[in-house]
Length: 326
Ligand code: UDP
Image 1 (cartoon, rainbow, N blue to C red):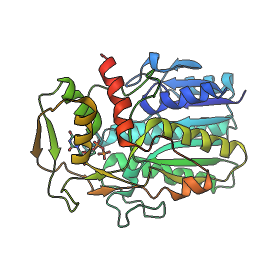
Image 2: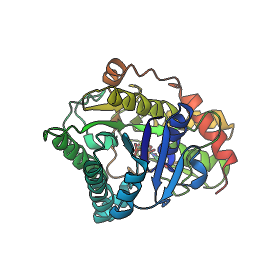
Image 3: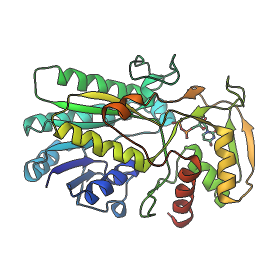
């Protein structure tokens, strides 16, 4: 049984990856401080509640578990919070990742999968965005992801046997189609979850942040990808590295986009609830359009997503949201 060490495996994306790893017969150890994750979300393997800042515990767990590969989700991910508290973001996302990479080096673990983000592109010049676009983040969160990508590149070029795949996520949404896990962080800023919570009556209205963007209906366009398809991309990337694949950086999106207004219409259709929507000013730092050029991951890793369907994505998210009561 191949042993995989998963940081942040009790969180939203991490828990979906752990589910697939377990179903595919991997031996999983989740290392998570449970700051935003949940014990119930870890459906397979062992959960160690600990922090990446605690290098002593981290090393002890590594020496006992002896993983062959690491998948690293644990990070702070709220953009406005990163603007307000940059040091928290650099410490958690960069310094704690260095701790993890050092322990990997000390324990001779050489395969690494990293959760990166479309936020590394900032305001891209080309749409759809190829991986070759320069790293040009416009907020501290994106800076921390770009910084780790540079560290990984340098480590892979240092003459060590370290190999990594960095996956740049676009807008991850939806929930496990079997309904076992889903998004479970009440204070979210994400459009689909906020729209569903408004339909549920948790908020009295949904705000559209900006209707004067240079897009057909004036609202921002994003590439929404189902969390299970994204989880599958991690499994494929892991198998690629275990088979001796070279380091690489890959976009994870479907290569098409929906506007905020299109998403809201679909949420109303799926829920059957006509909730209140108001127009509001632009949110700082939002690029007008973020759509992935996803040809590289499809051609190189043969990733073939199953849920490229906004209605299905929102249906799974709604099913989860209705049944999830924090
Ligand atoms: N958005 C919105 N109202 C909300 C939440 C988000 O209009 O209550 C917009 C946001 O400005 C962006 C898009 O929806 O254009 C997607 O935002 P989200 O936070 O879901 O993801 P991001 O693209 O920022 O990672």
